[in-house]
Amino acid sequence: MKINLQPIEKLDRQPGEYLDVHSMFYTLQGEGPFCGTPAVFIRLAGCNLQCPGCDTDYTSTRKRVAVGTMPMLVAQQCGRPGTLVVITGGEPFRQNLAPLFKVLTEAGHYVQVETNGTLPPSPWPYADDIGKRRGVYVVCSPKTGRINPGTHEAACCYKYVMEQGNMHAQDGLPMTALRHTAVPYVARPAPGSKKPVYLQPMDSQDPEQNERNRRAVVASALQHGYIVQLQVHKLLGLE
Image (cartoon, rainbow, N blue to C red; front, side, top):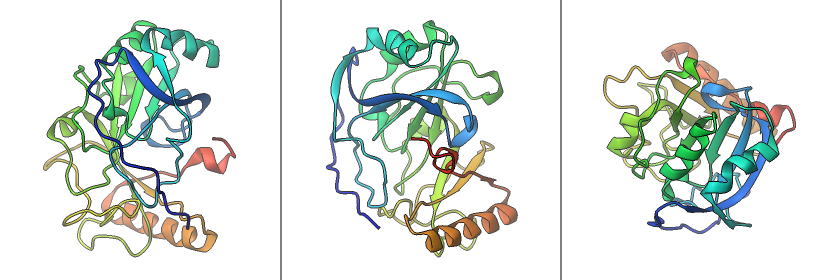
């Protein structure tokens, strides 16, 4: 398995009028609560973690983009109004996203942010009713032993990536995620949380190991009631 060696980057304390963007593209959202939905992805550059098992490039290119131009750039990717816009990385909350949320929602889009949960979310009235598809939704995919309290409050759901042999005996969730260190194990949803939990097999880039990962995820979901999630975009040959 190829090990992720992309460098850790610190919190960007700029006001958010410009963002470091790695890439933008139109595809299907392959994971989480809006799986299967056509979406414009805005991949932001840089991450505050270095997960060995991460298979995403978020540092090879970057461009400083004015947030005010984002609705136009989204429209160039997909001309339909009300499109899902997925903000991903790297770690999106490394940068201030409130100005981006404002221009995108005012343009009629709804937004999903994918975060590792370690940094405080940008100030915003986050949505939690997935069915409405309106506003800004936070999907927390924990990688360390702690989730920022603000992320617990903002998240509409949790998403875990698991490989076989890395399952906690009591709750069926991973001990670690993408092979990042976590003490005592990767953070869980807030106590008493009723928010959905998605469980996804890790892509180990090895067919036999991937099959073992899938079987482990199915067994855990059947026992504990989690929602199984596959990386549908990969199954369809999409980015």
